[in-house]
Amino acid sequence: MSESPAQESSPARESSPAPESSPARTAAESGPLHTATRLFVDHRELLFSIVYNMLASVADTEDVLQETWLSLTGRGRRSPLEEIGNPRAYLVRIAVNHALARQAVIRRRRETYVGPWLPEPLVAGSAAAVDAAGGESGDAADQALRTESVSMAMLVILETLTPLERAVFVLNEVFGYAHTEIAAILDRTPSAVRQLAHRAREHVHARRPRFEAHPRVQQEAAERFVAAALGGDMGALMEILAPDVTLWSDGGGKRRSSALRPVHGREKVARLLASYSSRRRPEGMAVEYRRVNGDPSAVVFAGDSPYAVMVMDLTPEGDQVSGVYLVTNPDKLSRVPKHGEQVPKHGEQVPEHGEQGPRRGEHGQGGQP
Image (cartoon, rainbow, N blue to C red; front, side, top):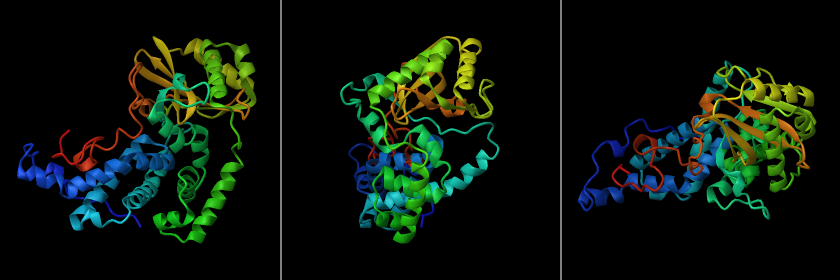
């Protein structure tokens, strides 16, 4: 069962930071806030990855991590945190159950959403950093994102699962948790978890190919597609698009250029993309190739500001585009770094110190950076 978030103020906001060598500072560094901070920072990236894959929203993930931090500090006020035998399992259980509770809020919000809904893009570093030999980037954050998140197409499929099926699938298939571990997290029997896992796995595997092309092949196809789409090249688009391609465009009712329904078929998608290029090209357009949810993708900028994120789902052979996910909703692009900015490490934005948890690198130092 999930623990309720603590409602009282965090100790970090109850007093000013003590001088560097004062007894008060020494006590704070060995007290419950320091312990909570250390535990939270040590596991924050794991928690971020699990919750994001359950919710597909960075904003909601940040809120859930804040609730997890409040639950942890609340527990620290009631009993010593050192008594927790397995902090990782404890924090994952709290975060997963808060994420499940958040699903009801998300469902209500989507009932009034305008047009197709797509996951909020999780943008990693430059796709140009992908090594030609192994398809790996040298950036540790990029590697973490590829191994701990699933593709945009997969996140869309996961939206069709029940919240419990999705939680079990993410924990088991993405993070390798055993059914017995998941049973403890969800307060279910191992038998019930196995049934949930079986249903989720069958549902997902029926909609996704089991094999994917080499990352370098994927990257080359993605760049060919983006060049054709932004250049309005109908011939090149007809060549790179698969016959049964589908385009989803998520503007949230805030971008007039977004299609209000998915567009199916090579010719229709090609014509729509060509029309975007000829009539709706943003001023001062620039393009950066990045990995979004582990996929080779493009971020389109209007000047320095993100204008669209374009994610491609490729055929198993990697030579054609079978799905296009176009996110133009400004709210979903607010966390995408501006043109030329360094991409923050995955999970770095959540939560802040005090009631929202410690920032990366802080370990209970008086509540200040």
